[in-house]
Length: 254
Ligand code: PGA
Image (cartoon, rainbow, N blue to C red; front, side):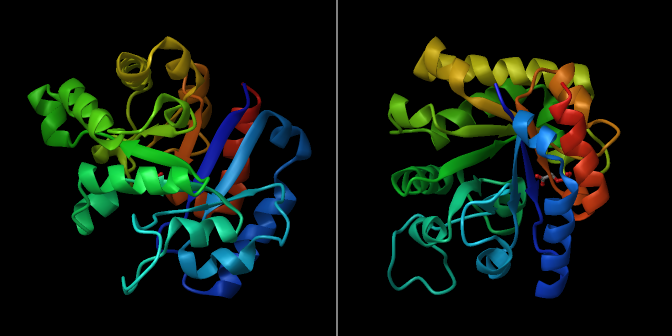
């Protein structure tokens, strides 16, 4: 199965010119042979989405970092799934830990967004992960199970098969403190098992599960090769074109 590497630029870079420059470097630098083995998507800030991707679907797929749960209307500042679809977005990251922490997003809100995104024909990349406190308390399993159940509530199996899950331990995101590969491996199995409990074996086998949290060129391959993830969700390192290219190459060699 093709691997998947998604770059999340978060609220970066400062200017459109820099975004275009980064994107060009990536487009030129990622080898065609790597793209045969790994699909690559970039999720820039909304403001740059329309400008940086080619008019036709290109080598690098377009993604967004969030979307709203209503299709349209008087919701100042929000961006709908249909708008993203019209900009040729393929993926949308939902439930990222930064949205949960800084914008009080709950599993219930993420659930509404997942349904709206699927209805618009987008692939939701649903982030779940435990905090350091939850990890220390030894309740990671319950936390992940509850989150996955909540965010997929009311999503039919046929639709659920299309989603991408991202295991993003909150304590590993943006900290430089990546999850030990063995621990990540058991989390990958756990996520698949939780999904299987809800949707059955066939559906669970189809779902891509990504790892995210302080991924760099030096550890990227381990999560796919050793821990068995289908790919990666990369934050900080996706803003450094040379490093992101190395990550894609490393994953495509697995
Ligand atoms: P990071 O972010 O790679 O900078 O830790 C990951 C993410 O937020 O998806």
